[in-house]
Image (cartoon, rainbow, N blue to C red; front, side, top):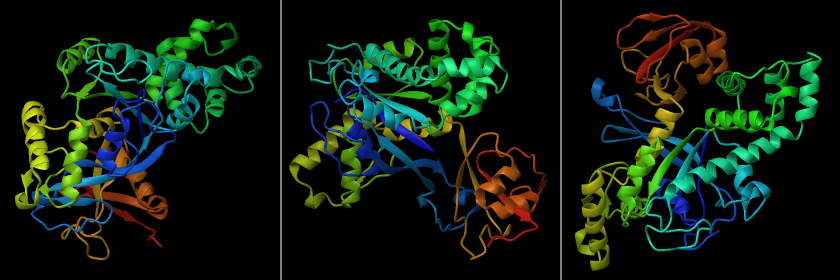
Length: 401
C-alpha cells in the first residue's frame, strides 16, 4: 500500500517525510521547495511477539529492536497544494497526479496557523487551520470529479442500455487511482442514488458522490504539525471539535532525533517518549541544548513527537491493517531455513487464512489444506478470519518453488 504525505506548501511535509525515511531532500522555509514527488521507505512500529514466546528472532523482511518490530511501508511526499490546484494552478498537476495513486493520505497541517494559503510564512495564529483542511479536501474532490465527468455522458448512455453497471463503468474510468469497486459501491449506497438512471443525476449529486468516494478510497488523517509554536494547542482543540482525526506532531523534532540516532549520538526508537544520550562528550553545546529542548517541550509535554503515531494510525486505524507472522515449524517458530520469526505481513482486516496463503505464495493458496494457530495448535479452515498478532502455519498440497 502507498500513503501520500500531502498539504499546502511550507507546512513541514518534507520534514515529516524525511523524519520517517531519513531521505535527504530540500527543506526550506518557503513555498514549493518540493517540485516533484519523493518516494521512500518508512517503518510501522508494532510490539514483536518474540518476547511473548521468549525467543531470539531473526527478522528478514523487517527489523526488531528491543521487542519492537519495525515493518517497512512506502510513502510518497507530494508537491504542495494551493487553492485552484485542481485547475492546474501552482504545482497542482504534480500534486494531484501523485496522490491519486495513494491508498490513504496524511494531511500535514500547520496547526500554529503560521503560513498563509499560498504557503508564505506569517505570524502564528494568523491562519485558521480548519480552512486548510477544508480547502485540501475540496481540491482533491474537484480533481476526482473532473476525471469522472470527462466520460459521464458515455457512462450514462451505457448504463441506460444496460450493457454494463454503473459501478463497473466508474471502476474502468478510475483505473490506476487505487480505487476499488467496493469503494464505489459503498459511496453509492451512502448517497442512496438511483444507479440505474445516472443521467438524472444533478451536478450536486455528482459532487456529493465524489466526496463520499474520496473519503472511502483515500481516507485522511490530520498531522497537526508545529506543536512547538504558539496557538497550536488551542487550534488542535478546534480541529477535534470539528470531528477530524487529529494527531499533534513536531516533524522537526523527529527528524533531529532520528539524525542523532543515525550518527550514534543517542539511543532512540521511533515513537518513543524518551531517548538516551550515548556520547555526551562529543556533543556541541548547540546539540545538547537542542536535545534538552526537544525533551522538555515535546516529549515530556506531548508524550512523543507524534510522527510515528501518525504513521501507525494511518495503517492500523484508517486502513485497518493487521500484522500476521507465518512460520513453517510450529515448535521452533521458524521457516524452512531455520530462521526464527523471519517475516511479518501487513494484511487488511478481514483477510482469511486461504487469502493469506495466496499472499505468501500462489502455490500455497492453490494447494491450501488448512492452517494452524501456533498458540492454540488448533486447525483453521480456509474461511478463518485472521487477527492481528496471529502466528500461522499454512499446510498446502503444493510446495513453494
